[in-house]
Image (cartoon, rainbow, N blue to C red; front, side, top):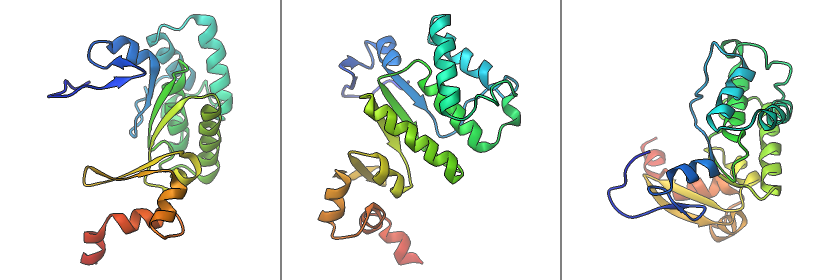
Length: 195
């Protein structure tokens, strides 16, 4: 969305500046803040986003059914979104990001403020996507989520990548018990010192 000041970037082998339309076909984005139309039903939101991706009606109908059921929203699909709980809205946002079956999904804190059942349903769904050879880029502050779902973890502190690797290797290299301890060891020193 932003024009770069220098350098280049590719997604799936396509230049993000020259091949924007192709890149958009390949990716799905679930932002941290939900981008839903509150006066539409859940199903109407999903159909709208499917139509924006120019999906054919048959494929869209089938995909809607699969995703609404998978995210536990099939019985709520005809309710207006302004009547949804926060967790339901988060699950619906995930459906919108994946309606066109993208190869690469960017999920920005998809389980924030979710109850444990909803969070684990999303985790199971992400694991299924990985089995389908989908690439998932996940941002999270929940280190147990990163440990559970990620093949590779990058830790960013003050806008800089300070660690990158397989979760088990990061834990072993830092001589700690889990990723949360890695994160605490590598970041936030100033916060801890000020407390």
